[in-house]
Amino acid sequence: MGAAVDTLIGQGRAALQAGDAATARAAFQAAVAEHECGETLAGLAEALHMESNYSRPSRDMYERAYTAYRKEGDAVGAYRCARMIAFHHGGGQGDWALFHGWLQRAATLLQEIGGELERGRLELIRGQYGDASVEQREAHFREAIAIGRSQRDPNLEFQALAYLGMHLVAQDRVDEGMPMLDEALTAVCAGEVTDATVSDEIMCFLLGACERTYDIARADQWMRAVDELAERLHMRSMAALCRSHYGGVLTAAGRWVEAERVLLAAAQGLRDHAQALTVHTAWRLAELRLHQGRLDEARELLAGYEEIPDVAHTLASLHLARGEIALARDRLERALGQPANGGYGRLLALLVDVQLADGDITGATATAERLEAMARATPTDYLCAHAALARGKICLATSNGDARACLADALTAFSRAGLQIDLARTRLTLARALANDRPQVALTEASAALDAFTRLQAPRDIQAAAAVVGSLKGTDRDDGLTRREVEVLELLAQGLSNPEIADRLYISRKTAEHHVSRILAKLGLRSRAEAAAHAARRLAAK
Image (cartoon, rainbow, N blue to C red; front, side, top):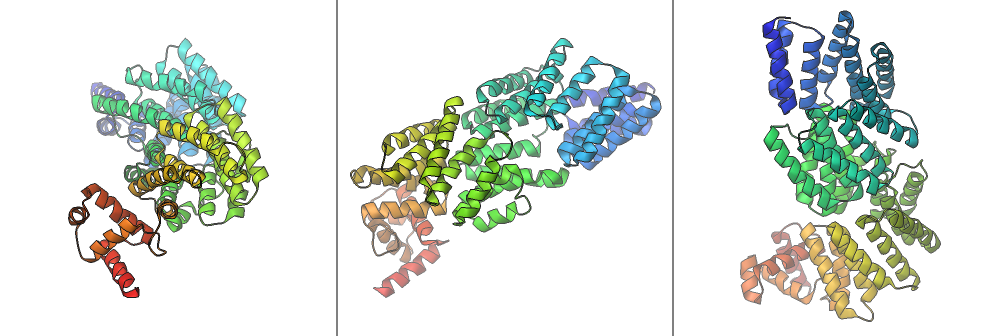
């Protein structure tokens, strides 16, 4: 090929190892211009994949490299390209017929090669994308790990370990799976994994597992480590799919402004490079919109994705919010009736709410028992909290059992997990449970819930909490405002600013801000000007 081409290939490989996709692409483009062959084309394909993951240019370049390798009689190079082409068709575009065709082509080439390491990589792909059973997929991953270790290839070993860890977490075997993901990402941070694409994939898997298990603390801790690693190694930003996982984590944590920014960026990335995967951001954005009370937007985001398993919880939540109880119940029961794919905890927790709304105490009790059994088998904070909350709700509905103790357990677990919206909703449920015989404590809990909902800007929850606070504290007229909020509203009508209101009422500026936010949310108003107009109408009606 010549010294110049060899130098360019060396530069490209070094850039790939450092995660510098742009430099790698430039080097391999120059190498292709000098000498087009399987090696230079495959290097360019890898650089393009690193830049934009599932892009059409990357796949097309792998196909050109495959053809070149076949002409050159290089079965190893052709096999590696066939494996990546299968990966692009399946994981990137959802074209599973093409995926299986290219995977079979890779398997045929593997017979020519006979290499143990390449067999391990094929085992990895079969475990991820094949039609095998849960047990067979686990066996594929374990075999890939064993081959990676025996061949002293940390890239294969830890990539397969991450796949196995994610597979086990998906089966709710969290205690087994999460340590594997921790170990794989530790190997990335320690520099044992030298393939930047594999490093990105491992990061993505760990964030996906954190999202699935609502492990906010783990996600935040690893994100700090990942940020430090990216800065040290000059690695590219995480793939859009990885960012969508973190957006889901942020939504669960109640960090909605940050979640929206992350999810919108991820959605744009997937539209640009992997249209078939846009569902991953669509349902997460829909989940966020539900929390924000933007139901019509949530429905639009889910249009066309209704039969995808990951969407079941969000779609059922939307039906429940719209009062479509039968539709919510049907969606959840169908999802729970599918072959075991794990992740049933959140579906069971929502089904309890739907069955209670449907007046089916017997069904809700049976569902809560299933959730409790799952929490005993996998005692994560998320499952334990929802199991306790479900039991507390049933105690309230039946007037049997110690609802307060169950709800207190749920509060403790939600607090440990950092799930702010669930924590606030549990406080509100506890307030209702205490309303009759301990009204002052109930008012404290309801007010805390209202403060949390106001900070989160969750309008439907604000209205529910305001109604409870109003019933406990006494309201003026029938619009849900407390006496203090009426005073603030009247000062708003006079054009006073928040600091001026604080001075007039001898309260802190922060308290004044909270009062204004609550008033706008309770009355469904968008601005101080609308609040002033409402106050004027209120005075005119007296």
